[in-house]
Length: 584
Image (tube, rainbow, N blue to C red):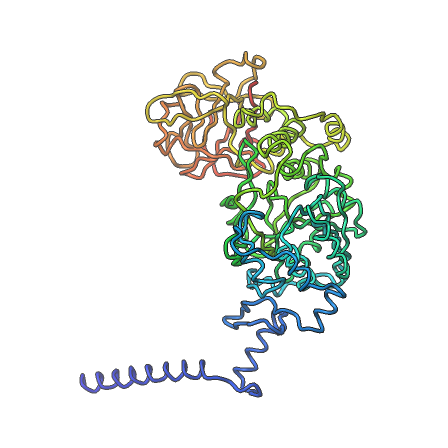
């Protein structure tokens, strides 16, 4: 009996192995193009069920109900080229500015000009979007846009590739015009010859104005209701425009930007950027890409959803023209380049709008390590002037942290800001504190002066603040009693018992730090000697709440007279809402 059972198991095992190999062979067997087998029909049905159609020149892989496009487009055929470029002589335009043998390919443009020229004016690139983007639908009556591209001594091959990528990878109905603003380049024909291309217009500045004033000139000339600002060394990807125009059409106060892919400055390889990044900055107003906060990432169930961003990089974005004008366009007293993205981002958020990055819109950009052009007052002084104007107009009392992080800005000229302050009052914009609390609570506030603390706590910068709840202030009475009490004193005369220094992850008063007594909900909080390695002392902001990092519970006052405890975090709970107020 035992032998019969063993033989049966062996036979079944062999049959299972043979069946598996047969299934895999059938799955990978080439299918005739005229095949009407059920597996072939099912594959076609899957593609149609996601609203995806076969596109000439696009290689598609069907797997698990997903279509992953690998190539966005092939270069247009000769007859298409004629329609695309009209009477423009592309070969003559490019041949007139070829790199000479022996010349440094990086010298003039801070990227490999030889490689850019070798690529020519168009190429196939990968579709770097998430596969779900291909199944999204957009309104059939989307408004058209004016594309505004400013440049100064741009390489001809790179500039032409930017323009052709827009014409090749955009719905013709969405492109009202492409406005080139030549910011006093050495050769006027760099721009003038391109005006022979249908829909392309050329404006030339009579002197060097810089990106900011040049963009304002382009916006004033634009005839479309939607403005699209684009850099001159880009390549747009498949269906890049529809997602951005759709979002602006739905809400004209939105300012939207694509995910910006990387084009290598060395070999011009097109590299996909992460879809989990947003724009951020430090107190010196230095822009940086940063990870989306974990809370937002956890809440994102759909990878095609828009990403809220505190700031945009500023090179590529779409904005309603009437909203652009209503908000005061750009600060035209800023020079050349730099800082204008912060000024625009603060103004949009604080004056009633919002900023988004759209994962289903992708645009490649050549990121350079240096500026290939000169700044009349030097790169550093120009950036300081521009960022100081942004700080003085928009950052209120928080501008002190800008000056602490960038002490060289103290005393530098930045011109009159009267008109921008008047604009801010006219628009009834919110204070920068609102921006910090509602848009960018992750930006930590630091104190200009360093102070040494007890061993075990790193030397960091801090700022003294009140922790307010309603009209009351968090106060200590000894090490074991914390409660809400009437806020006392003014400015620097606040009592030490109500002064708190917030350095994530610590909340401290001098050498004592806020700690939980135990980890269960309802546990009291107390003060004890600071130790950065002690898990009971680790806190972080969560909206307006203060959350204990290990237990996940929030600081709760329960009642004003009662002891403070940690409790389950509840959004909008008044007893868990804390407002830091800087003591100046």
